[in-house]
Image 1 (cartoon, one colour):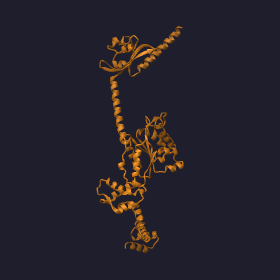
Image 2: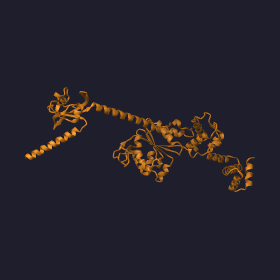
Image 3: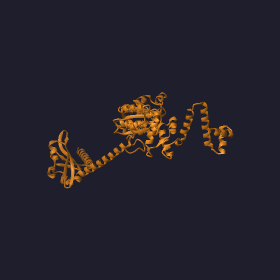
Image 4: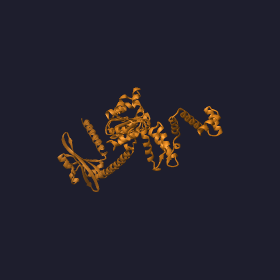
Length: 460
């Protein structure tokens, strides 16, 4: 019986020492009084903060050692107290207090102290982090903001006006928007303008080119990942583009190039309004308007099982079609004048009527993007303020000559014009020397004498 009591006593002593060791390792100061107000325990941090040593306070009434102590009052009224500032010598600290209950009976009270120097350091660190966060938010706001508005879209009644009017209405809805048009028609320009016009304009506009990101990375780019998901994953994980676009707009360009397996995950996000990072079990609710764009026929892709039908209808809340430049030639001169006016070279910079006529005849497979490049090419070729036919790229001059041929009145004129165009082009390639002309005649399948006759006829 005696051995059993000794064993229990030893276990109790070990347990008490273990608890004291735990409390001693806490970074906050701790003081405990019993139901009589006598100090039973302080930890090392308490001494560090207040300068009061164990042998000066343990076993004594707290009120006798620390004049004005508030903890005995907490013991009496059983009320918790927090944020009480105290001072011991030059040491200032802040105290939280609470009563201790054992089996429903008040057994004492405890106070937890934190040095005001530490609080001050924490406050400074918090202020620094908030400043960093503010700079980050400002940077994010600068990066993910729109560059264009509807004022930047140039087009008249028979051109883009209908598409612009529909886009302005779409901007004030929460429906997903699908923009369809050939490459170079300005789909991203429309997406920028829609976001700028919308109530989300003060929040991020995040553009993503689905064709430019490798399939293996697209999911993590869109949804992000948790720390430790991959061997070389970033510390703290990665925020996804959906999360970056929260309260704003996510623009998914070239949506037709998104792989089928990722289309299913995108559909789920659009249905539920929630994302789950790669490697995470938790979901996160987001408020994002999604604008998508493509130069592909999604409806036809659906029929061929290359695009999910349910995703197509989910994306196609409002469909905006941007007509190609060849179908809105009335916009061409307006666009040319607009592009010329953007240059700082001269206010009188212009094109000759012949150059404009050739540009009107051209089909513009690259649309407004190609027109911009052609005008820039012409500006760099001129010696004065006038862009002439010779200053336009060769493929456009060629098609202009060919098209012009078919505007003649008679078949004889058409054949003659075509023949002369072919001869001149062959001579340009082979050379105007005697050897060059022999080579040209051989290439054309005619004699050198016939070639000379045709050249002489063209100069009459």
